[in-house]
Length: 193
Image 1 (tube, one colour):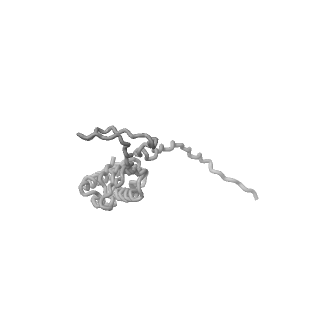
Image 2 (cartoon, rainbow, N blue to C red):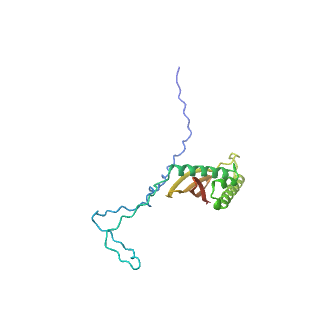
Image 3 (cartoon, helix red, strand yellow):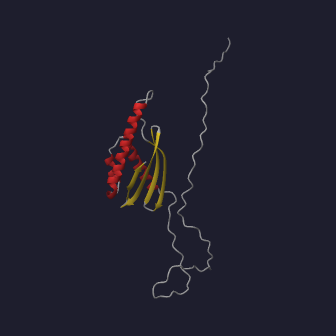
């Protein structure tokens, strides 16, 4: 009895090397600069003196450093993910755009809902256009998906996010801002680009 090896003579697909995406530096551009002052050095006060009063040459008190959140807090991240998830459901057509109203600041709710409705219409239009072009692809449209989410908390109680979305073969961007009002995070700005 003899053994015969059978191998496929099909050419292998070429391997493509793509460049790695660049990463943003850490969020530290709003930190206060470190001051290397000696404890015995007098601080100079450049503000004009109050009218009619002369100030004695006394050492000034050190300014109070403001707290800057590097990155975003856990509550802010959770709120952004919840809001982005709701926006994706609106864009995919699973929810009406009016559902964005309950997660929006009342004075800004109309603009947020309008952006959600406009985005849902643009996605539907892009899908109709892609359906006419397709020939051998599946009939079910590809859902809108999040590719990347970047957050920053410029001040306590406010978080801004930039979201990269993929819709079929197109890439879109969404920007939003949530603020903390009366213990809950609400949207004040939504833009779909």
